[in-house]
Length: 143
Length: 147
Image 1 (cartoon, rainbow over the protein chains, first blue to last red):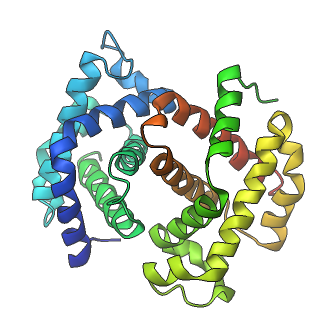
Image 2: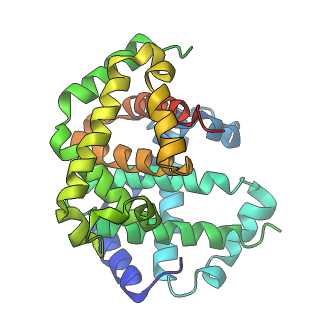
C-alpha cells in the first residue's frame, strides 16, 4: 500500500488547505484522542491537565502537526526523512505503534469537521494511506 | 449489560434524530468501499465499483447504504440490549455473508467521519466518545455469534 504519485499530489494539495489551521487541528485531534480513547492518556501521566484545549494538549497538538507537516515535505522518502523521530518514538517515548493508527483516525475526524468540502472520499483514501506510511516510518527503529 | 450514562443515551438519540439517513448511509458505505477497497470483495454483484466516481454514483451502493443505516437504527431503538437485537444479524454476517468482522471497524470509522462532517463543531470530543462507544457495542454485538 505504498504512495502513488497521485496520492502524493493529493496529499500535498490537501495539506496546503490544512496548513493555516494545522495547530488548531492538532489540538482538536489530540484532545479528542485522549477523551475517546482514554487508554492513550497513559502516555501523558506527566501532564498537569489532560482536558481538551488545555495548555499541554495545545502545545503538543502543534508539535504533532509540525511532525506531520515535516512528513509531507519528505513524502518521497519517509523512512530516512523521519529517522530521528523514529528513534525518539522507539527508544525514548516507546509508544505502542497501535496508537499511531488511533491518532491518525482522530486527525481524519478533525479534517472531516474542519474541511468538510475538501475531505472527499478520494482525499480521505490518499491521506489515510499517507498517515499509515508515516506510522510505518515512525515504527522503523522499534525492533 | 452495557451501562449508558444519561449523556450518552441522549447523545446517540440526538445524533440519529438529526442525521439524514438517505445521505449518511450511502455516504458512509461508499466511503468505506473507496477508502478500504478490499471491502469490495463482498459486493461482487454490485456492478461498476471501478473508481470513486463510479462507487459514489452506483445505485446498488446507495441502496445498500440505506440498508446498513436502517440496521443501525435498530440498535438506536434498543440501546439496552443491542446484543439480543443483533443476534440474527450476527448469524447472517457470520454464516451466510461470511464477512471478516474486522471490516465492521472499517465501516464504523467511515461512519464516524461522515457524521463528523455533517455535525461539524457539534461533534465535540464528548459526543464523539459517546458515538464511539455506541459503535463499539454495535460491532461487538455483530461479532458475538461468530465461531
